[in-house]
Each structure stands twice: as structure tokens, then as C-alpha cells.
Image (cartoon, rainbow, N blue to C red):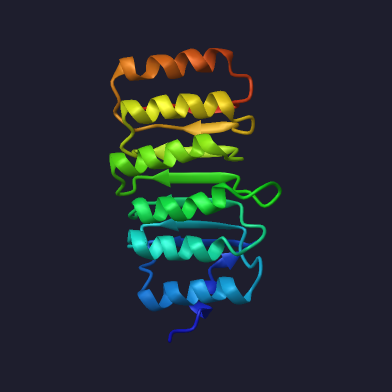
Length: 192
């Protein structure tokens, strides 16, 4: 079994940052094991173009769920499908102050069904302050769910839905909601 040291060396200020770092199965297992043995060794992860598949990411997320103060996932250019979405739900459903603050999914291989599943679960219960679903295969149904999420969620302050290539009429309900929303500080709808 490979040691977690190469991965743990990438942790700075309790943030694991991996850019273009091809995470082997042994290294991802080492990361899972580190989560079990070192409580709160990370508060956030940034994984960009690491060749991570859905099943592997789900396993990593499930291990991070054991940490009591884990706050942020920034996940770019990897695969995010149903197993990952289910794993993220465990983090999203944690009560305050142990909740997830930030979920950023950018340019990941994600299906319409997974996006809809994720958004449907956000409506149920979430303390997110920052949500980014960039180039995330959002659908008309997803947008209805996001509108419901914005109506119910008292915590969300930033939302990024750029590069989803939705038709203009899909945005009408969302834009009407923005008109009366006083919680949101930042909204990015570019390239739609």
C-alpha cells in the first residue's frame, strides 16, 4: 500500500490542492485512510483535472464526511455522477456548525440525471453559502429545482450557473426570483 505522504504534502492551511495530479488508486486509498486517522487534517479540497472517476470520488467524499469540520469541495474537470452525488448528500445534510459551506462543480463529466438529483436534494436541506454548477448539464427541470432551492434556503450567498447553455425562456423564473432576493451577493450567469 502506498503511503499518504505525497498527498498529505499537498495540504496547506488545511486545504488539499491537487492540480493536474493524476491520483492513483493507491493514493486515493491513502487519502481515505488519512481521513480516518487524522481528524480535521483538511477543511477543504480542490481537485482539478486529477483523472478521478465517480466511484473513486464518492469513496473520498465518504471518508471526508467523517471529519467534523470539513467545509468546502471545489471539483473541476473530473467525473461527477450518481455515486459522487449521493456521497455529497451526507455532507450537505450535516447540521450546523458541521455543515458544508461551499460546493463547486466545474466542467465535470456529469449527466442531466445527476444534476437533477443533486439539485432535488439541495432543496431538502442544505446550509450551503456558495454553490457553483458550471457547465453541469442543467435542464429546465434543474432550473425549477434551483428556484425552489433559492426560495427555501436562507444561507446561500453566491451562485454560479455559467456555461450551462440553457434557453432564455428557462431563465425567466430564476430571474424573477433574483429580483426579490436580498441574500445573494454574487450571481454568475455568463455564457448561457
